[in-house]
Length: 311
Ligand code: PMP
Image (cartoon, rainbow, N blue to C red; front, top):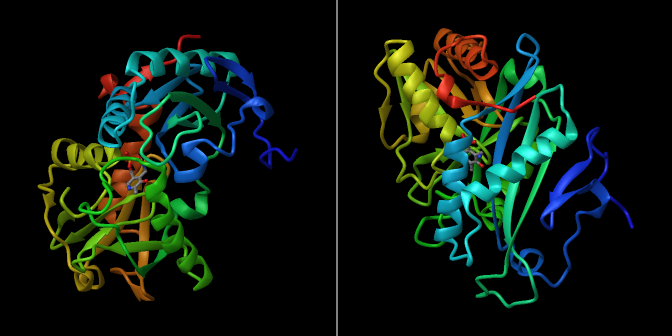
């Protein structure tokens, strides 16, 4: 049987209540997970610190809270409690003995052989693989406003991380790639800016950072909340959450994406129109530096956001 390729360098996976080799983490084709995408997940980063010789998991509590909330919204039963996920995640990270930054994916899914309305049985799996964002992405990306619209909240709850939501992201991302762009920007069905396929969006206009509000069919992103806090408390700015029009993007001095995976990524053009000078702007650059210093623990502030993995 073909395994996922390329195989990550640290192949241990949390599956079926224990740590197993990568190739042993398998589900049946008849599970509601496979048939209907009946799963919820979190993408989390564990940042390796060379100075501390230790890994710090960024905003773990918030990710575990959202995983619980996603299970409730997607009507999964029984819930897999945050304490169970926390313990399993630590066991997996220790078993892999990482000395590099990793992307952790925790997933709770509907196992068994039920039909689309099955609530359970629920199961937990966790993978952690080294998958850094390429430096060229952090240097800036060219974005396209997608012709695919965001699924509205009255059809599927995009504010939670449900596996099934991500086919909307997939179509937008593929369209951007086929059309020669690096990333997609998705509008709501009301024509307002929502977010990217796997990241939130900010723009800067007149020196003010602005991001779509949480009723814009976006994921309730943890990085977005981190960025709002850092902009206000560390950078002395007054960020605004409101509806954003597409044409405002073209008029913005700066646009950037943010997310656990995308971290802080400048957007240098939208639909071929350069943003500002066409280079990452000063607020985006300063925020990138601050964010990376905080997640790695080089900046000692916000210690509560970093959960150390016991050596
Ligand atoms: N929006 C979507 C659709 C996402 O998948 C992600 C990645 N989780 C984000 C935004 C960013 O969310 P977070 O900051 O919580 O990773």
